Length: 280
Image (cartoon, rainbow, N blue to C red; front, side, top):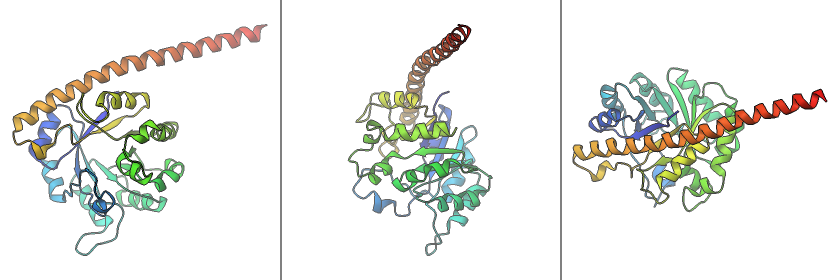
């Protein structure tokens, strides 16, 4: 199946374009608590969208899912509401998926699930070494629909220089295999337009298929709205970019089918050999 593609925006006009060209999930990003401190000096995206943004995007999104990243589990901070109030508002505003970022403990996940209570799909953003250590317990919990590996913050947690080091050193593969065995819907990281990125997007997409990933975020370099004023240019980026990604995915899927078909033939051959040996 094609990757579920996610794009972060709080602009209804951009969300409408993204939906038109096949982005599966429009992603409103409310996370801001401690994010600037832990990502200090990095060229990372820090959005701090609001519940009003969720409402505005909900009003224009018809086919794509509306996904909202809330803040890490927290109590009320001055005038800012607690996790209970924040998540409740997000659900009441119509989020289809709620993402919990930067958790470290089972208790935080339990509190998150207890707030959502099955009223929206849940996604955990696995991006701390502490969360990795308790992953096996998390995979046994009910109520978790999806898990996304956030390789940006996870690379910081492991003191890496570049986020894709975790893809090269096998860390992401080990995590994917654990989630695959548990039967979870999972994905990792982000992808740029084909031909772009310090590591070409083509390589990353092929890794998604090799590792059984089901979703990816379209990165800021796919379409950087802060640098584009013309909506016609935005539309061209989505039209061309999504079409190119889907074309490469078709190629990946055909190769994947080749290896899956080979495995089926191999299993049949082994079974046949066992029958022959039993008859001797």
